[in-house]
Image 1 (cartoon, rainbow, N blue to C red):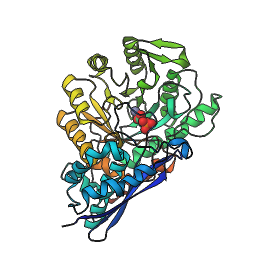
Image 2: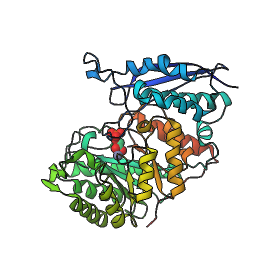
Image 3: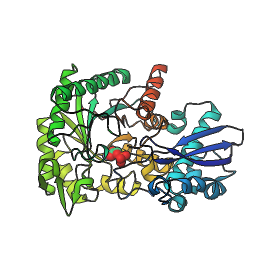
Length: 419
Ligand code: PGA
Ligand code: ZN
């Protein structure tokens, strides 16, 4: 039996230059493998604990040395000698320590063990993760314009993404969005917008006069790049509404408007009719369950309504959403919940309910391509990694290009409606 011999955690920096955790696992046959943990900025209230040192002398209190040290001191004793191939057994042993050691430490162990097992068996990571599930190469939803907490609050909505659903391969879909990203820059420049580098996820973050302007620019960028908006490439948005919600209202400061829940729903409805929007993430606040049900009744038949902060990849919250029909899709982020086993619990709930799912990176991510294999293994058919610049983003796309080039995996347009 292949067992866990050693675990070692260490502090590294994420794509924003902030500390995060990496873990190296050693198995009984000598296999050593490491995994890096991502870190969000627009985090949901219900996410698992990301343990930070709180020492103001280092990284403004955001150091991760405590979480890193907990890997060997607190987590290793729980799983040393366990069957490394029993991911569920390993994860179940770790789950009670999420609060004490940090979900960042726990997730690092969960992922490093999975990768070490794959390496030891000389199998691709996705196949080990899939464990018999139907794997596929996902369609990317790619950030072109960024706002909110990822771009200095230039506008309130967080992501304006191109969803290239009219292509038969991942490589072609990625090529299309790369052209759209370039066209978007040119369009901004010719519109007199100052372009000063890219935002946290590699998209453009110009100072715009309104959120709607981003929708208009993206629709025109798709056209300028030579694609038919709505036919080949549609738009997904991540409103990330919890992050401009105060005292029961949605504060669109850029537009000088304060909206209540039904006005916000109405705004999303009208914009999704005027622009080729097919997917809306976090259109309402993370605890507005009744509002989400009404939003879904109204827009669910036409649109993918994805819960990110609403569900926080938490099986209990996802179950509640499915039972009450709050949303019809789930954003899947491993570090919101802390183990691979719980992540797959959510993936399986989504699949069984006939919902849609999007496997997602974080705004603070790393060069680890793990997520690409997770997305393939999930069979959910969609991945959200940010834009087509910045190597922490490209690491995932490049892995998907590699897997597609090898052949054997279908490219999924699962859940994407072609207009
Ligand atoms: P985050 O953003 O990683 O900062 O939470 C990603 C998202 O909201 O989808
Ligand atoms: Zn989100």
